[in-house]
Image (tube, rainbow, N blue to C red):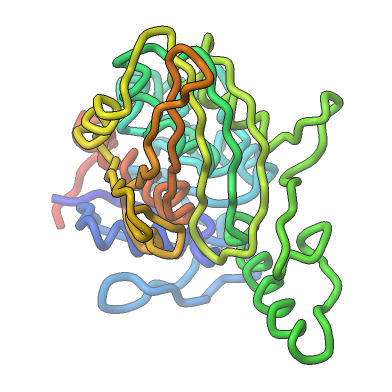
Length: 343
């Protein structure tokens, strides 16, 4: 038995990763459709041992599929997700368009799986921001144990968070530095090669960026609105993999050793934490992996009940494509995907 699946935005980095992960986890697919804009009609994308050709989103009949994984712009999703959902399939959307809609569940399966119960209100489920996804996987088991009061986060976000264009810009600038000088920035506001940029998204009136606001808004929706969270988002010259320095203050005592054991038992988390020169994870090592890695767990003596830790994950996977596929698996487990057909 299998499902009829469509991936919208199949030619993009996350769309291709969705196809890869569906295959890796052996998600039961009877028929796969790759969907893209008119400009990509006929473009071939890899699927299992062969390829599938992209079909035009404007011409495709979405009533013929059971579930849709979508990785497109927010504007595109706002136009198309309701139309697709109205045709019957549940849409798992990776954009920011629906995350804060009260009738759309925002899901990380390790954190709030029961929220899928209201997915049928609009037939849309939202994927969180990539930096939020890995953060909440690490925070939720600790919050359950000692109730989090406040979190301070500094992110170190890779250029793949800005898509293929961001990766290309880092590559071109890095090469250029050693030849004729780095080409001027186009994707990022300043040179990203051999640099860090403390600005992702757009500035708000309060001085924070919308990328930073996403992290606290989404954490509030998925875990607890009473958690005070402040964040500085930084773009770094890393191709793939987001890192976060996380400081947590709790309402109740939680020792570093207890936190380490809680996280070792938590779904989706791998603890790599030895106090030696290589006893931690880096974004390079997280590439291609499913887990959220937690390292450098230690008591914070400046507050009554505090911990600091380092959180790393592949942003194209857990931050995007993997989480979407895990949501599809959750829907399948709970019998919420539409008609099944014989493979």
